[in-house]
Image 1 (cartoon, rainbow, N blue to C red):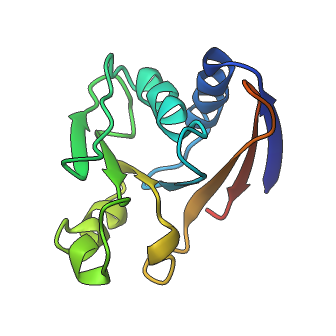
Image 2 (image 1 turned 30 degrees about the vertical axis):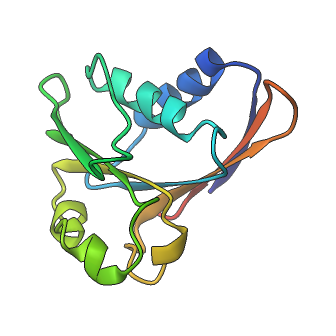
Length: 145
């Protein structure tokens, strides 16, 4: 399934994320594609808010953050992985991502997955962000799950 949205603000981007989060299946991996400042972290903050995570911080420098989810019947742990600084498959495997995305109790959100498409799970949601104006973003969601 493919959907296209246009967002004119950070709030709209987060609302789109909340709508997506309300329909996610167990064990979903979400991959976010787009340039710097395209809205990936803002979108992830919207996802996190749906799962009761009040303050999500970008994991750019520490690579991955993990948040417990207490308020959802299916998702128990929210993982946010930023691959921007990683260069090899060995680097990403050091974070046990295959174990994370194979556990149905987890939600894994990956920013900057472009270099690692060969190892990503087939069951995933790909989201593409494109800045079309100063405050406008096209958000294309492709659900492969």
